[in-house]
Length: 79
Image (cartoon, rainbow, N blue to C red; front, side, top):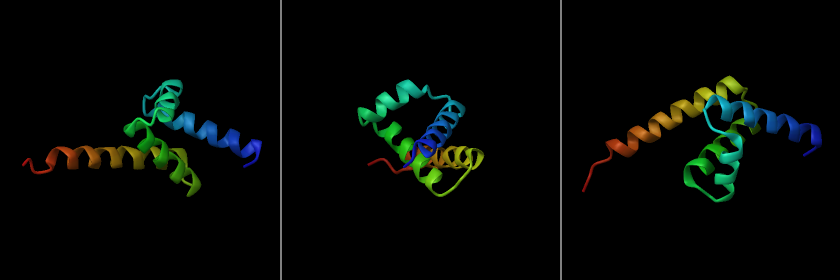
């Protein structure tokens, strides 16, 4: 990846994180520490960026995916 592409990717990532109310420094630290939530969000952002989604589409997708993820977690039958 070239420097120009890296800068565009980093800018994209920061814009999405700020919109999601996540502090980039803390977020990337947690990704390095392999925190499950942050790694999941990081992977989603990267995949959407690679698929050519714009910032708005990425944010909308992540909002929907988080909502479904939370609903499935709490709606699962308790044994």
